[in-house]
Image (cartoon, rainbow, N blue to C red; front, side):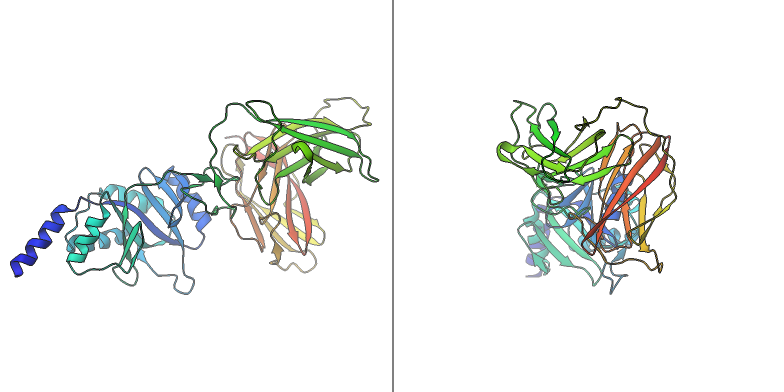
Length: 434
């Protein structure tokens, strides 16, 4: 009988193809920050690994970021020993793993600080691996269509998964580099991920007409029509991006006027906006996502009715503003290191009460985010509509990590919401050359 059992075990082990390391789960305090750091260090792709969570793909390996348990922050294995422990367990149950140690070391050394809670192995025939483990008396603690999980210890779990990765079908409208194999939420901004559209040749066009407004106190009526790049037809269907289908920023030529508004769609797909604007030159920046298209930011220079001055004047002379600004009883401090062109900047805004100095921790989501940031250069040839690098919304800090295209002075407007009121705070910063 003993020889019979041993024979069955040996046949099961021989029938199981070598397994490969598929992914590891790292326990971290901030999933979005860890994901961004790992993507940069590994030169990897941000995505949602279906059934697992926020991840970075590096070649054919993945690092998944789990939120650390604040009640047990030391849970999980140190990264340096987690794979060795998982490998020892697999081999002790007759399974062979072919992943090179160098691949594991790279994942461990290039990912942010954290502890490993799960090591996952893939197989072209996961059922045979599961059956081989069952033959040794080991049953999974949890099993789904795609995954079998085994508890090695209180701190470490091993997963057996299929090696077939489903193609990415969804992306984040604000972070197109974040992708998933199904509907999910973006780990960076919390937005619903939308289907990835087929590529279209050409750029969407934007028609803008500015006429004298009819409503009392509203100086200009703007009508905006988006046209399809293939046939020129007016686009009528849009997806919500941060709770609105269409965002419009209007900045005066001297950078003194700033408007963030949301036109209403009328019949025929045309958007309309009544806005109090003095006669003058403005740059209109439209941010929208056509259904079946890609995220668009389109600039249009406009002149409002009644303006009779010269056009194309010299750009305004900007000067770097103090790091602290006071608006509506709130003190906002921009804490940042040197900002360099073509490198991710770190722009952290800290909000406090101007009278007491106490940190403000009751900020509210504004259009689905902790804040919004518009950045323009002095001649209005570059504009960026940014959103926070994390999903924390209550304050006191709001963090952005934009990449600015060239050196020079930039004006930016931070917007956030508190007690139902939107607060707008301007700053001017200098960007150093690369």
